[in-house]
Image 1 (cartoon, helix red, strand yellow):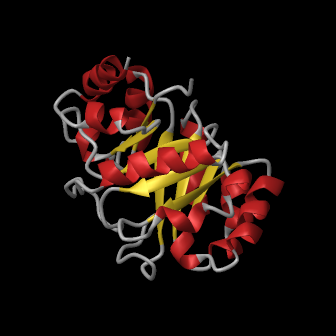
Image 2 (cartoon, rainbow, N blue to C red):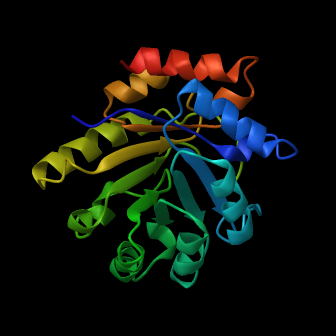
Image 3 (tube, helix red, strand yellow):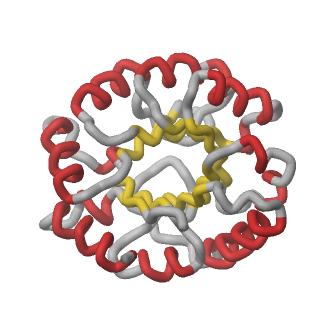
Length: 220
């Protein structure tokens, strides 16, 4: 049985005290640090380059889950892998040569993920399932933190789990990103999610460490 994992999204952290926030969520029991890389083209925002990933890696003791919300992701795989990413996830919508990009990630010794926007059908994954480690389902439209969870994500998760079972690919971790909070994490888990990305659902709380611990308790 796959372990349920909490992955605080550093997009919602305090970047004047990023090392302190990283230490805080690690003390709370976080399993991964989720890092959203945005290029201002695929999504309407700009965030972290490889140098920032290097700095985060130096401050962290848990793996970095790097989500590339960028066009032409294959161009940047080596840079983010070398900067310290442990998981690298790319979007199916911007990778016409998806198999090639996945192989680039695997060649660097990293776990390879594919992300799907809310409107993208899971059928695009069928011919790549044997090559990937993770599927990231976006439960909001990517680009900004603090959005509300899209309810249809629950059906999508059930359908994805059925697909993985059909193709003997149940080893693949299923991650959900967007609008995950303490009050809906159980429902998302019951639908088949393994990795829970939460930004404002953790960092906007008065006691982020306690929130992570409560999430872990709910998932137990």
